[in-house]
Every structure is written in C-alpha cells, then in structure tokens.
Length: 378
Image (cartoon, rainbow, N blue to C red; front, side):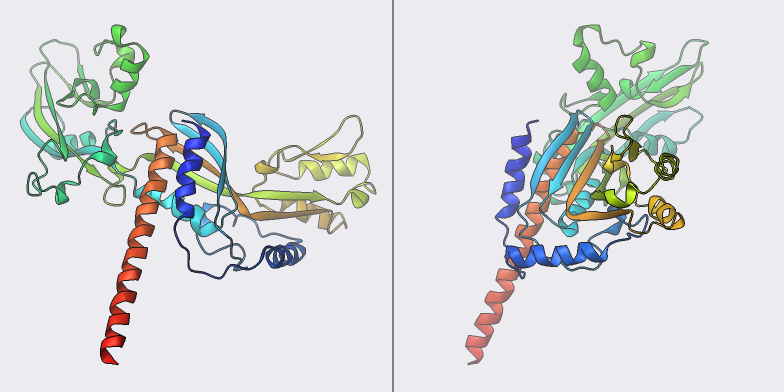
C-alpha cells in the first residue's frame, strides 16, 4: 500500500464541507502562540486517544482540516503514521471508525448436526465466531438485514459465506479440531491463519502439520465427533466485537519539548544526570562530547510531568517546556489479520466519508423542507 493511496483518500475528506468558523492563518498562529506560553506545565496522562474529541485543553482552536499523512512504518498487520494539520475531533473519529465501524466477515450462525465433545453447542458457536476470517471482500458484500436477494434471511451468496466442519476422532490420541478444519464455499473468505500459511507457500501447506494447525476450537477423544454448518456474515464491531478488524488503534499528540539551555548550563553534570534519569522513559540523554542534555526520543514522553517536578525540586522551574502539538497525531494501528492495516485505514476513511455525506444530505433536505415551509407560509 503506497502513501499516495492514503493521501488520495484523505483528499476526498477535503471535499466535505465543514460549516464552521475558519480564522485567518495569522490569527490562528497568534492564538496558538499564546496557548503555548500558558503551557509551561502540562498535566500528565491526559494527552492520549482517551482525550477524545473535546479538543486540546479546551482551547477551541479551529483548523482548515486539510490533513496530511506521513507513513512511518507499514506491515501487513501493523501501521504507524502521522496525521497532521487537523484537530482531535477528526483524529478520534477516524480511530473510533477503525475500531467499530469498518465491516468484516465473521461466523454468525452455527447449525450443529453432531456434537459429542466436552463443549456444548453454545461454547463452540461462540469460539467459531471469534475466529478471524479474511475480509477483503467485506466492503462489497451486503449486510444480511439489507439484502433483497434473500429478503433479509442472510443466507445467500451476496451477503453470506457458508462453512462446513466434519471431524471424528478414531485414534487413542487426542485430536485437535482447529480453524484449519473449516471448509469454505468461497475461497476468498477463509480463516486468517490458513490464508497466511497458503500465501507463504501454497505447495507445502499441510493442515495436519503441528505448526499449521490453526486456532484450536475443541479437543476430541476417541469416538467423539463434531459436525456442523456455519454461516459467516458481514458486520461491524459496534454490533459485536467479533466483527472488529482492529486489535488496537491508538493515537497520541506529538510532543514538543524545549530545554532552557541557559538554565541547563547552570547545573553540574551530576545534577544533569539526576534530572535525565527522573524520566521514566528514555526521552533525554547527555551528549558524551559536549556534556549537554539532548532530546533523543520526544515520542517516548508520556506526559507524566516527572521531569518538570524534578526541575522544580531542584529549584529550576522552567528548565524544560513540554506541550502537545494540537494539530499533529501519531497513530498506531494493529489489525486482527482480517484485512491489512493499510486497508483498514483506507476503509475507515471511506466509511467516515459516507457518514459525512449522509449528514450533509440530511442537512440539505432539512433546509429545503424548512425553506419550502417558510415560503409556503408566506
């Protein structure tokens, strides 16, 4: 997934008309400069995704909302990127959509024909529902409740995928029934662990191999059998956690750290070392050549205020100034494997765009009805 593709989707968001006050750039910079002066000391622990959409420190700053993205790290199930030139409401909306409103496919209906295992039918159905399935086609599928091909029954090719499982233990050794034993009627939808093994080397895949057995569903002893039919449907995490494509999604405000060099020079090397070590995370270090305190990893700062408290205890208030950049966020996204992390971000932007389009359409409709009523009443 290229950085340009995500930027393209973010460009679409620019087309959404946000009806809000937009101050001039100079006024905005002046307001933010005043806020920075007030933030000599920042409260700990509040500058994470939990801050929500309330804005930063209640400042109420307004942004043009032309977001920019810079990808830092990208793997199949992991993405780390910067989201800049927007505010907390957009960042938190994107995070919440990734967690709860990007659709995936998961087993939703289980018809058990034979079950002589130690687990009852409900336990097995629940475990099957939590098996992550490849969901690249989920955005194109229909929700079962809206499918007109099956009148909402949720058992047609447009809104569901059928699985079968039939395992019997005839040996004295315990037999593990796993996700690899599920047989799908659609090759595009299968357990994630099976798809991963097939992608790695389709010719050497062996579902009976110890390292390719998949997720254990139940264990069978001699004479026990499990036979069932399962229906997987499209859904979202807001309805049930089994449909959530994200293992975790977090964002933090990018910290801006400024050391008062003149005041720092008044400290001895021992005092500098003591101050550097007061930080629970490795944010600062001492340059062995110049003996100066330098910032080596600003993002490791957790807004715990320990270095600020230490400076005050040393009689050096104002030794360091730390404040969050109000329009810059660092996202970390981990996928369950149902879809790639990059695709998760793109799908979330698409879902968010659809929601904004729906709001705008409803607003235009309401305004049209109000205008017609006023003119009719005149």
